[in-house]
Picture 1 (cartoon, rainbow over the protein chains, first blue to last red):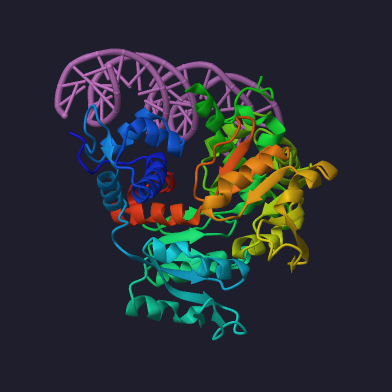
Picture 2: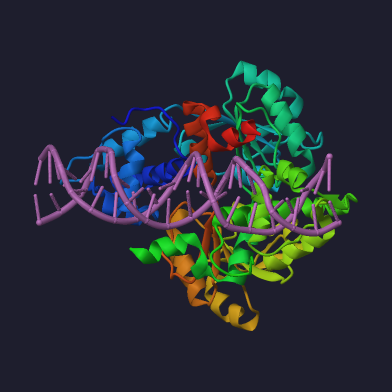
Length: 223
Length: 223
DNA sequence: CTGTGTGAATCAATTCACAGCT
DNA sequence: AGCTGTGAATTGATTCACACAG
């Protein structure tokens, strides 16, 4: 019995995202059924992974047939809580914050921008991507007025920890940080880091040591 | 005998990045010695991980004492190939490409922008962040003229695969993609994905299922 | 026959525990 | 005493292999 609970490994959640994305595309292009084989090939996983990942949450396929794309998409969407709209606050209105605020993928995927914040008084009050930049001081109040789920931290390295503390004090439980520092936060807050420099350094390592040694490529070659 | 070769797990490389970053900061602020304990605390790892990760490449500490920050930083820098300057081509001159081109962390970390490319003729020739936008067609030639190590793909979803193929044809062996698609590339190319939407979806999952179940937090709590 | 769902087996990564240097 | 380096033990994730359903 697969049941809902017990601990889900992070790699599983990462793959669920990719399954969901592919399924959304597949539905749009009229594909009705897909076997784990094909779903795996499109998302860089193996068929066994697809099946076991899904089995953590239930049985969604039909033996001998495969998965119904629309149905599976809806199931994963529900599992991941993507049917609940999420409100995000973008903190930092520099280049990066601006690019983020203008990203069209937000609305499309039910992430609503609740506000764009900056600590720099020369930016506060100005309009960026059709949003008025607000002072960080008003974050806590805003979060009470309108429930905010996620804080996106797009400030320089030095300010990140202080800003994160602010966000947590304002009641936010999920943080996506673009600053290259390990944030010290209470244990009931989920954090996720996106850091281009780390990624470049990571690539540098594999350029140095040979790409074919990397795990991802071993996977791909094998089957 | 730890030796240099045999396969290095990806999580190890990810942590090396973080050790390196912390060590650079530590050196700058005058810290001379650091035990695995402290290094671990600053980077979200455990002391045992720090020691075993390093042991893949050699023995850099002094028993009973700890690690010399400057020395260890230099060693990791060398291991990761960060003492070799890398040239990166940014492909896509939209919001994201522009933000990337203006990112100050590049020069600081020995990543040089070799060129900014776009397929849209209305952008080609214009100047963005002090760089002239070049046509994607000239990518191959440019890569021969000046060795380019890494392609950063900052184009919309639909164009990503074609652009990646171009980059590979131009002789590039490492790709950092911001597009939310699994790229199909030859096995000797290293790819790394950065995708904000996936990250938000990932957070959505843990908001739904309780942050305290996530692996990262189990780690932190335990010791 | 095709392809899912899943226990059992394998492979990989983390953690333990301790010998050895300072 | 304090802390590294590393085999051994453990925990966790992937892959195998097969019973079962259409």
